[in-house]
Length: 304
Length: 304
Image (cartoon, rainbow over all chains, first blue to last red):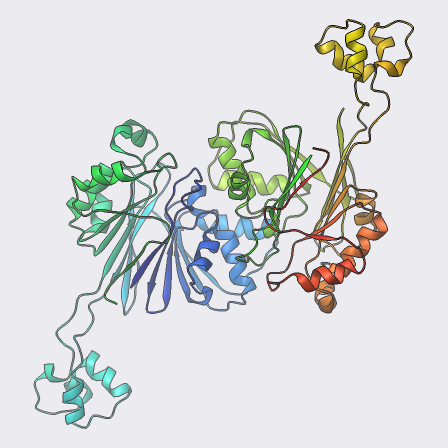
């Protein structure tokens, strides 16, 4: 898994930071978290491929998080995409996309699959390899955070044992690793763990929380996360502005990371007023030692 | 007058060219011609001020020409603009802006003044200092080109004569220059031209033609223009593609410039397939010697 920060700014454009967007790349699939104006250019700059984009997870319908969506969808169309695209977001995301399609007289030759979130969120997708969860945040308009959680993976496959047993290399190896030799009917009488990767390795969990005041769901999404990405628009001295605009200070975001027990905490969505983030880093580090502050292009690799 | 090319690409984003937009700066006022995704960032990069933006002239409602509009309007709002903003474009421009405002739950604290064009176009604005004309182009969806034409300016003011006559420096000098001494009642018996700037200097005319097949209105807008900005999406060998997509080749654009009698011709809106524009320049130069090819950031100054 790779996490690539495409844009790390907030509502007011800054020459130093692109508009909010984060890409998670997992086994060739891309999950795009938010899509501010210009995200398609940043996506291209990071050499991500349009054909790999499977999930668009949109936190809320404020301009800085969605204005890049119509242009991205049009470029996918021009790239002759045919695979379906899953778009998840709060109620209204469907109307936003379809109204722009109609007003700009565009057609899309690939299916758009919408999931509109309501209430407190919940499990958006539960597939064989990973789960996507959504949790309602606290930002005035309906806003959701997301977690992409891999399911446990089977343990390492014992190649030497397989060769000793003359198991032919190919699809059978994968079946043995995922299902165990008893189900597959190879190596009768052997203990399961000789061939099957049955010492499960835990999958990774990445959570994305933007925009919000500190709230319980932010910690729920970030619980035990390998990486919790959390908005931190203001320094602590602007707490009253953070409250008024329903954002977090870096201290508040660090406290969420701490209470969630996240392994790594990466802050993003900084107000354009900050040029030197040193003071923000020091402030957050007092609460969550080792906290990281995102910049455009920051890439985090997990298990690669 | 200054013309600044903010974006010189076409529909498919290119790492070498931003999406279409051109700014004309005249006595502190900005006319923005088209507004593709990311135009607000380019506007800022060129150190143009939001408060100076008066006219948004939109050629047509294809994504690459308007997707930057909602974000720009939101940034104007965040910059606490109060002055009205004039938005001119084909029918549907008003609904596009207002639908996005509604869907993204934004308010604008400044008045938006819409002029929706229909039919063949015509005079959009006729003020004391300049005229804005629109002309229907040929691009499938309703599309208009524009000309910004300064009115003739009074001749130079005779400062020495004014001082000899003890005309007090101040507003009276301007009145004398623009109205003549007889109307103002100074320097009785003098020939008018001693003080009044009555040897008129012609104003500048800048025309913008995108997107279109070659058409009569393109030449009408560009007639005698000091600068004609014309789309030229393809090289001549892709004439059939230009016809199918209702664009121009560089040769066709150069022929329009020639038949219009434009003083300078600047081509823009190049397909993302072209990296080296040398062959396109040579092709156009055979028809319109001295033709210029725009790049992002190209700035043309008239009379400064």
